Image (cartoon, rainbow, N blue to C red; front, side, top):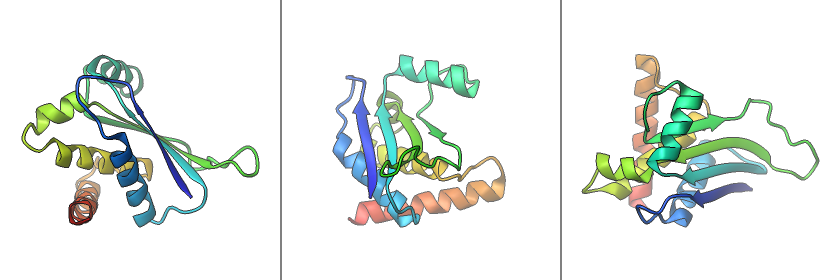
Length: 146
C-alpha cells in the first residue's frame, strides 16, 4: 500500500493536503510503485524553502519544489515497516506567483514533478528533460480528466 503523509507548514495559501496526497499516490501507482511504501509531502513558506534550497541544493533563494529521494536501498529496518521513498517539499507562495490564474494546475505539476524526481527521473540533459516533461504532461492530463 502507498502511504503519502502530508504536512502543511505554511499559512499564506490554503492547501488541500488530502488532494495532493492522493495525486502523489496516484502517480506513484501509475509509475509501477507497489508494496508498502511511504512518501512525505510538505508545504512550506518561502523562508523554510530558501533554507532547504541553500543548505541541500546549493541554491541562493526559494524554489517551487524540492525532492529528497532516499537511496535505492531504502529497505525497512524491521519487517512490516514501509519502504521510505523520500520527501517532497513545495512552496505554495511560489506556485501561486508562477500561475496566479491556475494555481491548482501548477500545484499538480509540482506534485507530479516532485514524485518523478523521487523515482529517479531528472531533467539535467535534454533527452532526460524531454522524457520527464512528457511524463509530467501525461500525469497532468490524467489528473485533469479524473
